[in-house]
Image 1 (tube, one colour):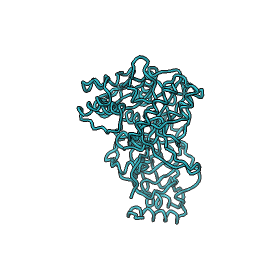
Image 2: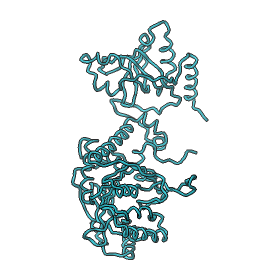
Image 3: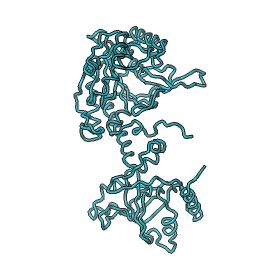
Length: 502
């Protein structure tokens, strides 16, 4: 292993600490009783200084200003940064001054983790600080952090290299507080959604990640092998068919935050491993689902930002309900001037040729329509818009439209030109479902490697009887991108997929 000059120096300091009898990685619990954010927001000076007479906090040393027998330093914990004041005679009240003179001044580096005890005060410049009376090294850092400048709460020359940020996210989180804020918001978003569903009586469940049949979506799966059973298994591409089994079993409303895996491309909005929320509600339809989705997203936007008007890049997107609704055929006509509603596969291929859309000969009518919509229309819907009433060929798990032959009761929610959610009035006719699966098998035989497998056990479940049901899948990562104003899915994944280091 090659070590830089700084890394070698830090290891030498580690040895010196140990020679002084200091354990740089002590085992005992450290009795933290507060944090930087709490102190800075609650300390009122003379008014309540008695409440802050004995504080104990811990964090990384991010900067030091040495003034001889005293120092100011910045300590960063999980909530933010606070200034600490370290004076030699306070932390070394006896004759032995080595804790200050050797350990603090010469063997401490930026990035080291310290515990401090003391009292809160206000400096002459008006900054809330901790006057340290006891100092304890908790972790010696052996690798220097990238240097990032800060002033007035703003970060300058922050590290923006994606290779560093995504591969060494742990260091990115330390030096870029706005990155931590993104993931705090992600957690708050998920908790708000969970509260919304729980308050309405939904039940959170878990379904298998390893599946004998990769069902519930049109996607290419990852394949693995189950040694004990000696059979191939698949990482799930969707949890839909298992959640529907729960509805068959008698639950009225179930949901799951599902980690899914699709062995497909990577770009700004796609990662092979991603999180999706799916829920299924008995005795509802896609109209109810649109209204509920509007209410949910409005509530989430307000929880994160206090408003429904959210900045996304240079745009302002309104999550105020209700959202626009338009059929997929009308959307294509609106953007191309071409009505494809009556066209067969040959006619659709001709439209693709006319619009210069390159399509594979293996795909069928449903995929052709999807390609036309994706190429000509999807990107135009910036404000939240429900694209509704899809052709039956595009939706093998969806109930046929109650009044429009050849269509199904489905919607996709487009925001900022990307699909955020996909929902159906769920198909619960087992005979119709079997026929749809068989059509998918024909597409697979033509070479469509994203066509659906037949799940015989799911068909058996449907034969017991599934009540009328509405279901939805919401892309959690894409929704988080919108609500945190991040341009890439990698920016809302703590540890995105990367090519292994050489």
